[in-house]
Length: 401
Image (tube, rainbow, N blue to C red; front, top):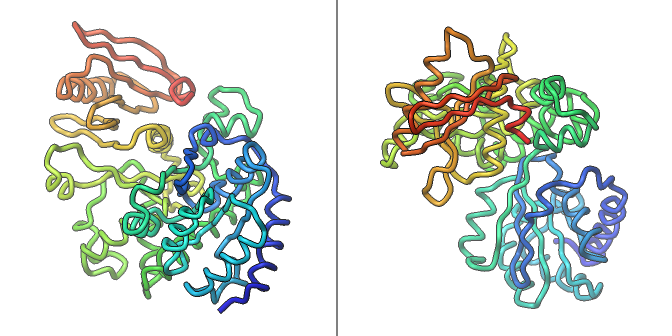
């Protein structure tokens, strides 16, 4: 049990720290953040990507005041469902109708409290680092009363704006090496991302899902993050790192995805069973995490570029696949069941790889009846036309804008 006096003290303390935060670079996500009366706005994303800073920017641009409460504060370690009544009393006492809650989903029964506050006319914003834990409760008790939004680490555009860089090859190399976690981009200290990965594996996955063998989970995560851009199959990983069951590996995949550490994109197929059966492609949700936590012995420049293109698409489209038949195409981006972009990524087009990359893209374009496709390279530019088909080869510095 937490007393109302304790809750008040934590709110005051956190509010003072919250207001002292640097508002930093204005995030692009602020322009698309959904705000509707009687709806809770849910913002999810990987730890340390700037969710609380986004709330601070929102506060300063739209609201004069708010109540902010981060439930991961150790002073709230004993918070339970009955304490929501005391929190409600404190909210009424302060006469503020905008509520910012961070990681509230760690408290059982939180969704009923939010539903009550929505009925009472409060404007509510919730941030969290686990997509699945939020969505399960939302679907049960807040159906039709919430709007979700994802926040990602800095995009390439945000990265060069934050660092005040020109848009050129040097800046792109910098982005491919450092990614977009704001604190790491600012300080460049690898321990920040080492600790971040440990926080995700332990706090967001092992503790929440009662995983005892954290070492096996960590070994699997390091293996996966070291293989960005490659295909992975749970069946082929069975037995590695002491994980004996492919079903357990699939569970770990889902936990890694829900915590925004990794993404696993399926091969396109109209059959959902075939999608589930075929190998997935792995991508890191931040390139700095690859730099600081992978065991790869090579620079992997091509795969890092491919990962950067994935992150750009992931921020823009809800459904992304890879295509494989006779050839292979890296990305099929879809929205509402319709193909929006067909994209191939190749660090450098040469005589030895041109036919493979070109034919794989053309095959996908013809399969989806798309007349225009893209090959993203590091710094090459060209146009290829074949009857009704047009392929634009453009440098990543142009594509990622």
